[in-house]
Each structure stands twice: as structure tokens, then as C-alpha cells.
Length: 351
Image 1 (cartoon, one colour):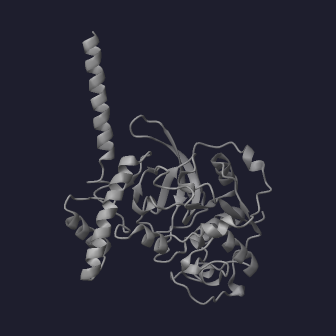
Image 2: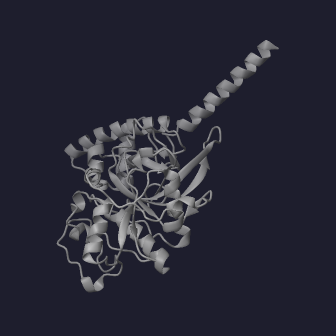
Image 3: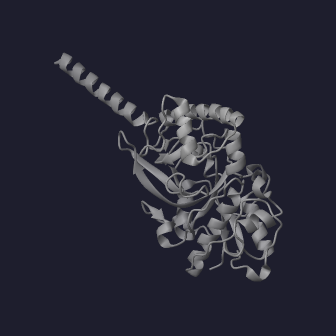
């Protein structure tokens, strides 16, 4: 009998190990082949070049190839160490160093935020809000289409505009796409494509008297002279608030008041394809926020193996619809993953 029990225990141990291995060994063929990584690195690199229409001279080809190989190691490590259900692979950023990626495709200046005192919400009634299992402002008409910041560190402007688009839609029952380029050009507290802060952008909007629409002041992804037209401004805000770090309270605020601007460490997002992202803290330092994004909802998923509950945030990004889950990022909710709870803010439009 003892021998039988031991054999059964060994069988289930091997079965669990094989399932775990199959779940984590996704690097070679993930998400319908989008992240296919051959043992032949050069073949994989050439496929990457063709897929994303990259162009290099001979010297740059060699440099980018070495970076690409280093990034494949990061991708493999991310997949092996992932605590959620996320899959990481070869994205359009796979030929960039981490420094280049942050410089060109993020842009949050968290250093500016830490040195200021910000207003807290007067309305504490949201803390009594009963939370549903899931909530999504996209289905309620408060979120515009995913946009693309391009090669410009203007994430802060997109996070700001998305937040105000939601605020305006909730108050006025009308969704309008607002101008990020106005903030890039006209916000004197921030640094355009060299980075900025959502709270600074709120101050600028209040001082200028409002934002123009996307069509009136279109985005071109570079610093230009401010040409704000006061007669064309469409949306103004009355104030802004900095929200608590408690993620239950953030969810309560979101359900009552709208999408939330946040800062986050985007290091894992460079290679994200889909699933609920939950990288370990040693890889994604919560104190190193470098990217501004927008929380638009939340939900609950399950882990693959033991089917444990996996709460998540739904985050709107600004890298286009072909990144992540059609431009969105699902990230673990509840433990401040990648610092997502440390810089939560919102504009305020009086009802």
C-alpha cells in the first residue's frame, strides 16, 4: 500500500512538473506565432526585421542584432519568472536597449512628482462604494480609441488627455478625443518629448483655460512652437486630485468617478503580448516609475495551474493598437505591481 501511495505521489509530481514546464516554455511559439524565437538567432532577427519593417545599415545591423539577442534572454527570463498569466515575446521594441526604450517610448518624470505637495480628494464617499467583480469604462463610452505616442517621450500627455476625456464624457455624456500635442508644445512645466508629469499637465490646462480637440490640434510626435487657439478650446478642468495608494480605494474611485492616470514601471511592458502581467519586484522595481498610462477598468482572472484568483487592472497604453491586447495591458491588482499605485491622479470637472 505504501509503495502504491509513493508511486501515485511521484506520478502527480511529474504531471505537475510537465504542466508547469509546458505553461512556462512558451518562448518558441506564442500567441499564434507572433513571438516565435528560433534557436537560430539570426533567422529570428531577420523575421523581426521583416515583420516590423526595420531598416539598418551594416554597422547598425550588427549592433541591433546583439541587442536583440540580449533581449531574447530577458524575454525567456520574464516568461519563466512570471507570476501571472502574461506572455512576453518579440515586440516592435525588441531591438532597443532598456535605456533607448525608456527614452523614446515612455517619458514620465517621476523625479518631478516627488518634490511637490498635491491636493487630496475631498470626496471620501467613494471609499464606501461596493465593488463589482469587474468594471470597464470602455463599455460605458468614456474611453477613446488607443493612440500612439511614437518616438516621443510624451506618455504623460496621453495619460492626461485620456483621463480628461473620461471625466468630460461622464459629466457631459459626450466622448471627445483631446489634443496631446497641445500639452507637448505648450506645457511650460514639462519637457515635451523629453518627458513630463500628469499633475503638471493639469496645472497647465487650468492656466491656459482648456484643451483643444485632437482634430483641431493634431499630434505629430515632436516638439513644436505652441499654437494654442483660445477660441477653439473645448474642455477645461476645475482642479485635480492625487489618489490613495490603496488599490481597493482606487477601484472604488474609478467606479464612481472615472478612469485614473497612473505612473508605472514599464520595463516588462517592452515585451508584453497578453495575459495578466505580474512580474517580480526584482525585475520591475515599484519605485522606478517611468511611464504614464490610464486605468480604465478592472476584473478577475485565474492562474493557469491551480486556478487561483488573479485580480487585474485594465490599462490603456499609448503605443498603438498592435501592442499588447489591442493596445491594452492587464496587470495584477493588489500589491502595487511595478509601482502602479504610487502616482494615481485624476483631473476634476465639476458636475
